Amino acid sequence: SGLAVRGDTLVVPPFEAGWLKLGRRSCCLHFEAKSTNDITLILDTSSSPGGKRFGVQRPNSSTYTVIIGSHGNSRLIIERNAKIVVATSHVHKQGEDFSQYWVDYNAGKITVGSGRRGSGCLVSWQDETPHDIESIGLSSWDKHVLYRNVSLSNPVDDDSFSSKARRRSSASGAELMPGEVASLQALSCEKLADSLRVSNCLRTLAVAEDFNKKALVNVVLEFVSMNFVGVVQRHEEIFSLSERDLADILDRDVLNSISEVSLTCKT
Image (cartoon, rainbow, N blue to C red):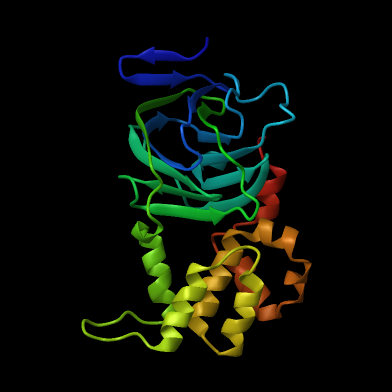
């Protein structure tokens, strides 16, 4: 059967989607969901994408897909036009009861979190050539997903993300004590960390290594690992990195065998 509303809950059957038409190109979607399988959100450039998650290919439509609890509830995945761009391991759905999540889209930057809006950031990714999103689909894989308390609001301010605050402190190598003033080098490291993109990450890594800023090097290597597929597609020179840097990237848990993820992608 198709979509159903039971009280205050939207019931989404396998491979279906309930669509929200946006009044803005950037927004934050906050919701509660309950499922024994993947929780799936589709950000679509079409203003009338239709009910099915899968079906006839729409030639003038592009999508981002956010999958929470993919691969046996072991990963959070972001896809761009059905190709994986982020695969973060050790991200799980929170039990079998309703749990809060949010997905923020702002000028090509997708941020996913758990809990109240703007807190508990799980992953963030910036598309260098962003889509103009017109609709968001509340979807499922092969099991029913229940959604409730769904709301749309303006994008969350970047500075409210706890992960960004952690990146700033880790990039400079130390947190300031009350009354202390950050050095020019520390401020430069923070700015470089805040400005990390797939397009500039290898240049940023070279700068960090030239100035022997180990904390910033670690932040950049973590970013490369989390966005490995996109970095490889854009930068063939990644394989010219030192053996030490490549080993560091490939050993990180956030990567967790991207080749395996690509081969088993369900879309």
